[in-house]
Image (cartoon, one colour):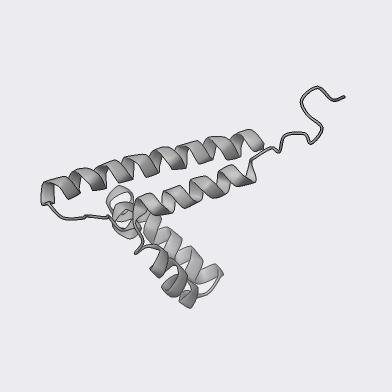
Length: 105
């Protein structure tokens, strides 16, 4: 389980780096700061999964939950969302070192 969490964290970190790189290239080309919102990035990659998520959250949870929480979340920069996801997954999958040290029984 810990391996899967760390692997998913690595994938999210790679997605954050790719999204940040794309934003920085667009910023240099436009001579202004460009940050792609998560909703636009998701819409470009897979519009059907975005609409399926909206329908399922609206049906199973509440329509206002999607409007408030996911609406706010989809306006945030994509690289920041992926960085937060990577950090949370890494923290969940982190294994604390033993207190007594490495050579204890």
